Length: 203
Image 1: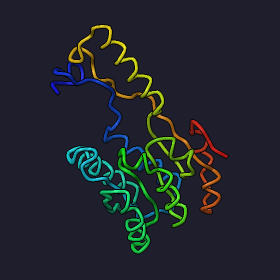
Image 2 (image 1 turned 45 degrees about the vertical axis):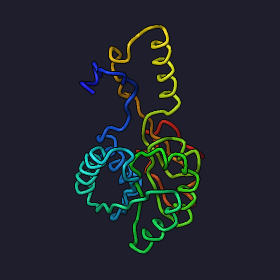
Image 3 (image 1 turned 135 degrees about the horizontal axis):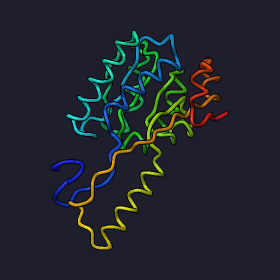
Image 4 (image 1 turned 30 degrees about the horizontal axis):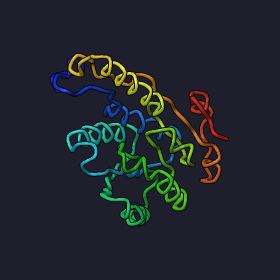
């Protein structure tokens, strides 16, 4: 890809994997669970690219250090490894969980949310669908809006536009969703200052 403004070739679309979002998730997560000191960051190797993962981890580690936390990376290559990974987190006495965005994690969100709840592990997710499924909190772009924007790209291309001439769009609106029911189940009290900034609070 030549640039976001002029991608070239046959590539265009929407981008939402910015490393800066991981930093923001770490900061919001610490605000939600102030006593947390050790946090797992779960990665699906190869999705996204290792270069993107490394950029995200660099930002996440910087944010964690600034907040007095330690991040520990865990990998899950296939869904069958979820149980093993959560057992390893429990053994390491991890106090919270953040996910690097992955299609596999999104598809397996209900199982991941259930495992987090079973292990009494507060978690910060990348799409609101995780919080709607029972996850503690999420911060990221609206997935439904991304689909609508994708449809707009398809419409333009079907009308004759070349993908190379369509700038790659970056999400510019993000939403914080907090599941209070899950917070209560985990014995957590979410600070009112954070609840007041949430785009949606699930009771």
